[in-house]
Length: 138
Image 1 (cartoon, rainbow, N blue to C red):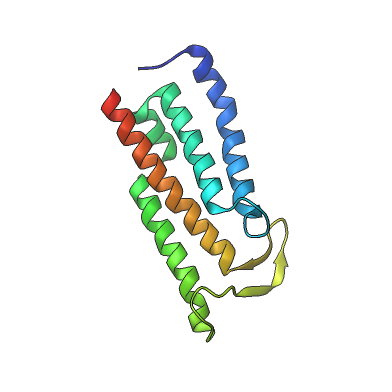
Image 2: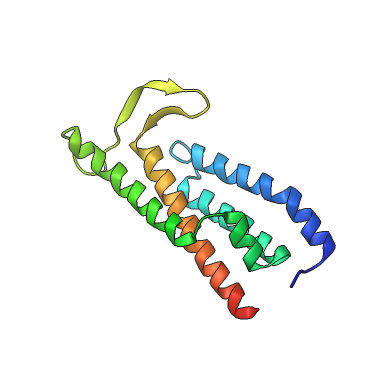
């Protein structure tokens, strides 16, 4: 069941902006407010809006990956970033940084990898909950 033509048309233009903003929140999160959790919630809100406008099946196709796989990969990424310092002889979850800076991102280290894991985890869990609730409603 589609909602209105206006909403369906508007969503096509809003979704890319929301996803870009969620990526922005992810990248600035290890230095300023934001991060994986806030970015993941904004991305999940974008997919929820898409589901409202076009239906859950279309939103699942648009996401193109099973939410539980996102959740699992995010959890694995966060765990790996927490374990990497142990290989360097440092305590669990200690920030380890590369010496070279990457354009736009800055210094790459375990905190940003952890944020990416949290982003994927929050996106996966949130979209699974949203899609499940929306399917029950239909």
